[in-house]
Image (cartoon, rainbow, N blue to C red):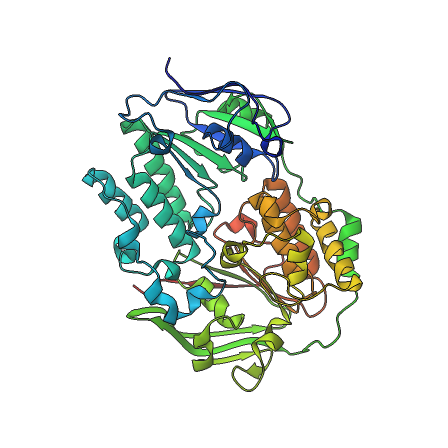
Length: 483
């Protein structure tokens, strides 16, 4: 039997990147693997070991990529990381860039970033699956988070890898596209030599074509087992995981001073948003009243994040629209910071922009000042409040760890604590459970439900998974694509 990847007693040279026990793994021809485990358990460390990113002390990783003509790891293994799925992040990207059309000239369009592909059938299948033709001439920063995932998947698959590793490939995709991606990957494994390795936090999302599972927890790589063995032994997550003590602490948290006390939180009157020839929102009327909890949904690219950028005062076009926030008409004299003081927000764009090498507690503290990074000295009271919310989210032990050294799921929990830290009147959660394991998903839902029981709290939440919505949802808005 052909052994595609073999690691024997693998120990990385650098202690910071070591698993707690030596890694022993063998992936064989025809096997398709799911690497599963809790947030911070070591899944990404294991993948970095598999791909040779971190050299080993004694036995190097052995590869057999035949029938591939190249023996180079870089030619044969393609890895789409969690952050890659939000686009090609670098230091030039900033949080509000997507909404500022004057920056478009300096950014490439999708067409220029896709590699050449000799397999026209594969190319056509990918273009049809992900709707790439409609994106070809769009600037990369105008893509929604879901469209960025489609673009990254297409770009990678066009390069014809022998082994494709994907970190949480289904999050951020609408239900139809998720189902089609399952079908496409299964088909590719049947008609090509492609072998798939999925890194999954949401372990109830394992496709049927996966043959084996490698559980990873507490930086220990478990034995490779069959999918059926894993499913038979997989424990159920309780219906509630937040302790009664923490729930009571949220409900009894003292209210902040200087609240708006407005009955109307959001009022949009015939709002339209266009970029070039493309209309994102057209004549949208929408009102959100105090205490309502809205689920905002729609296919990828339908305008959900654009709509939220108007509410959060991040989109310059909001000044040209008939928008009132907290009962005050947009552009009537209030500053962007006055509005943001009353809003807690987390989104894929924010996660993408947060390339800050700061302690996690400082990332949470930045939510008190609505900044990307912390540029004001923290008071003792501010630090206490940050640590209070980090404890609620179960991440207090991470407070002094660098944000960039945390796993993607741990980073998401830090950004969620950042959204809650000022006890906002309006909570806007755009795909808040991205990258979280099943336990943490349930915990965050519990926290949202407890928070929304507080007086005068309003929620707008975006997700493509209906089961992620908390039970407190009272209203729904579904957006459809304009062409």
